[in-house]
Amino acid sequence: MQESFLRLVQGSKTVMQYVAEFTALARYTPQLVSTSAAKCYHFLRGLRDSLRQPLVPFHISDFSELVERAHLIENDLIATQQRWTASRKRFGGDASGSSSSGKRRFVSGSGDSRKSGQSEFSGTATPSTTSSGSVSGAPGCQSCGRRHFGQCYRMTGQCFRCGQPGHRIAECPQAGFDRRSNFRSEGFVRPAGLVGRSRTVPPRPVSKGFSGRGGGSSSVPRRPPSVS
Image 1 (tube, rainbow, N blue to C red):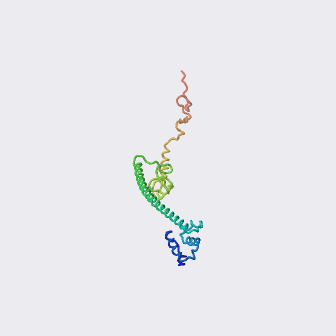
Image 2: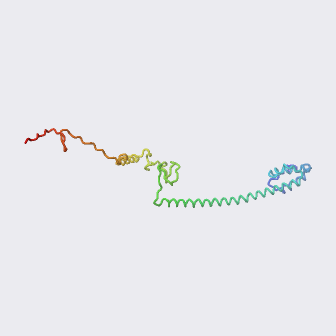
Image 3: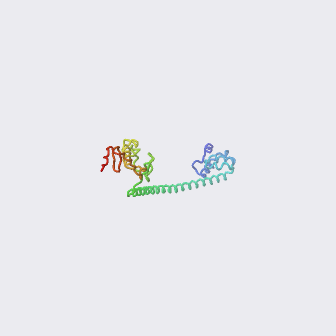
């Protein structure tokens, strides 16, 4: 009986169940509980940690007071656990409901955005392209850093100028064609600096020995005037 009393612990029992078993075994070991302080010591030793640790600093030597305080702490722990469980269920249900409703809102919002995107580009207006090759209003591409619709040419290996595979924009044959077209179109345009200027015509040279209208020297001798 003495060994059973020394090995006695509360375990999963309530405080009142532990008190009943402790008192029953203490009758067979009166030498171990001869004083109230010794009885409190053995009782505290067998309590659960959650009940023993709040009671140790008080150094309670009265067994009835020790049992009463242990019972109060146990009731408070049970009430706290019940409140925590209830709040977990309540907030857990709200969180799951809000997440499902959030998913529904996200799906509906994405559908509206797709519809609005189709209505935007199904009309006559077309998105404008900037000088860097980006399309205004298009989503930003993570591969090339530009804004465009559809699949990225950098991922597919296509030319950014003509869209054909097999070469890059620096090797694009379309670039040379564009330069020649620009040169021919610029050749027919009169420079701006010459617009409005009068054209100066140099004088024609006069050959020697020829007398034009208005007189002048001639290589043919003149006939002397007749004498009347």
